[in-house]
View (cartoon, rainbow, N blue to C red):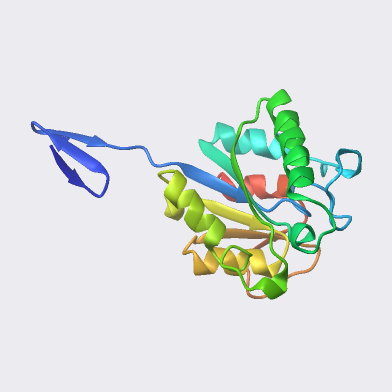
Length: 187
């Protein structure tokens, strides 16, 4: 058996492995309303249309990965355990709606810690590539800050969408909600 770029050739047969197509989603401001340092279940509010959009992505053959900066942990506003409790609850809410979240990656550091995982650095994307066989060329990153878009650029993710009420000249796709991304991604 010869291995060539994760494609296998055996006895004259060509077998291609299936790389995952990923929708990388920021959390605060994309999945839930960003009230600032959201870490309590009773303060977590899904943005309208998020569940419908995620179902649509899954129907298109994508899997969902959340990549989120959580500097509130590094600033001691809440604990890692608080974040994990909320994350497990959020994932269960997605699951109740038929949506599996492949993984949630988070950076617990404050900005001044200069870590390699805080967006716009690519540490969370790199970790996802270590954990899963992902085709970044067919994947998307959706965020509500330019640091999210910079992460996509630095990680060589060509498909990116900014969720914002204001147009950004440096970004091809700017929409107001995750639900608004459906027509862009299905093209």
